[in-house]
Length: 396
Image 1 (spheres, rainbow, N blue to C red):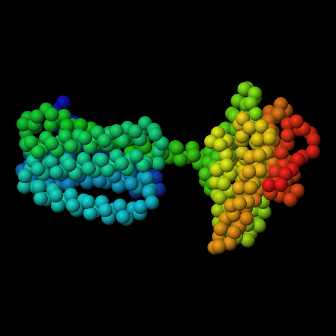
Image 2 (image 1 turned 180 degrees about the vertical axis):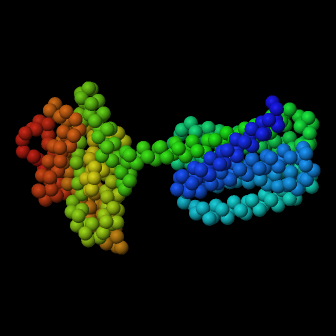
Image 3 (image 1 turned 90 degrees about the vertical axis):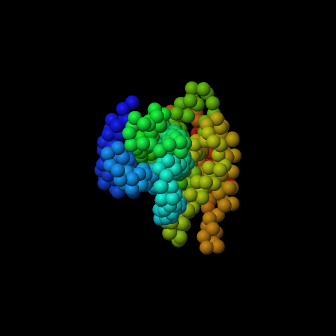
């Protein structure tokens, strides 16, 4: 392993990564996380360059003092980028303030240990180990599901903390001399690991953002933003698969159409913001009454659809009645006033003449309008034994 060559390659890679982050920052509506990561790469490159200059420049204030401060600043900036990317509830100003306080404390520790180069290097390594440990904790909160980039980044941060602890132990033994020949192969290996881990971590940040963005777009494509339920597209994709499975296996299968009563009057009287709260409350209330395998979606406006795999008409009607009762018992409270939420429900069980979920929803929708016309807050269900007979209604 030729350490000087590795250092030169690292300098070039981190400088290029920093410039890349700046470009991404400019193209991504100026998200601060990219600027933090860009600064982290560039500061790390400059810190390595100054530390490497110890061989030819006898200026400890720069090659030791300033270099170590920059090397310590790099993981701090990376953590600020992670913190901004997470977008947690704690204001970023508070994070900056705390980071500044910690940075000043670290500077005092470094200043106190500066006269002894061995202690100085060890303190720097210990502080960096702490930074990487904190970074690992933040990475666990990243808004990305268990993907390879996230797990790899977490592994690199934990490994980096361990490597810096090892480097601190070696530094306590003897300070690194100007000549690389005086360094032990263990010290060179640990130092090389630190350089490679830093570079590898920087490479993962853009990939992590890409994965998070893809997951968010996929979620938005399948989720209703207001209620966080499935949207129409996701509902039909999932329910059609469950329908096909029901046909293949020969199990019961039912669907419900749920529509909130007099919802337009709520919007007109209270405004759309309160109407949105009604929709959110209704979604949570209905979801709480369903099984994990049931599919609840908002099709649009105040209309919801429920898929009940393995449920026959009698059970589905009981569920629909329970939904109506629970909704009626949970009004939305606004400034001490109760806004009553009720719903009309239409349902149907799968029969041989149904070719897909759309056919079932069409018939359930007809039953729903029948419930509306009969006074609302009612359940109308088409039983498979009488597909062409009169509709049966039951007050909720």
